[in-house]
Structure formats: structure tokens, C-alpha cells
Length: 147
Image (cartoon, rainbow, N blue to C red):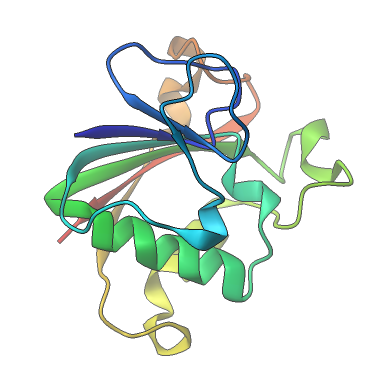
């Protein structure tokens, strides 16, 4: 299974499109804070322009934990967020977290702040972001793989 979480109007034909609003093409209506996707069901989750809308406290940790539970072993989360070092989009009023490579690494390395049972490997793909059609040129692009 492949999920496109927080998809908005960016509908992907080869994925289950998940959003809190029932836009045309959304397959599953769900607020990411009230996660109901099945555990160990996904080999891939796309989160493009959505994670920055959650605070770095409980909401974001809970979402990351739920992503980890939903991914199969070896599954991956591919994410695009405004890069706080370069993006003018970082400081929009509805953005609650500010993303840098240091923040990505800290988020996945601070298990004492979560349930302590999820582990990811981190791959930052800054050099490839110009080649990806779904990204702004000043986005931070990263992949987390479930161990």
C-alpha cells in the first residue's frame, strides 16, 4: 500500500490519497491527529507540504509514531517541507514547525520524548530537490526508512 497523506488537491492515481477534507480524488478522509490507517500496511508514505502544519510537540511526535506503525519493516516516508534556512514559506501563519536537517535528525533521535519504540534511518536529499516535480526549489526533501 502507498499513502499520500495530507494530499489536499495533489491527487496521485497510484496511491491512497488521504486528507482531512473530502476533495475530489481523496480516497480516505482523516485528520492526521486522529490516525486510523492500519499498522504495517504501507511500503511508502508521501508527506508533501503537510508536516510543517503540526507543532513540534505532541502532535508531530504522535504523527511520526503513527507513520512508523503504519509502515512495514523497510518501508519509507518521503517528505517535503519548507526549509527554514531558505524558504519564504517557512513562516506562514499556519506553519507550526520549522524544518532543517538538524530538526529532522533530532525528531527521529529523541525517542525519550516519544514512546521509545520507533527507529528510522535518515536520508537527506537536498541535492536532488531540483529534479522532483512536486517540490518547491527551497524545500527540504528527506526519506525516513523504518528499521
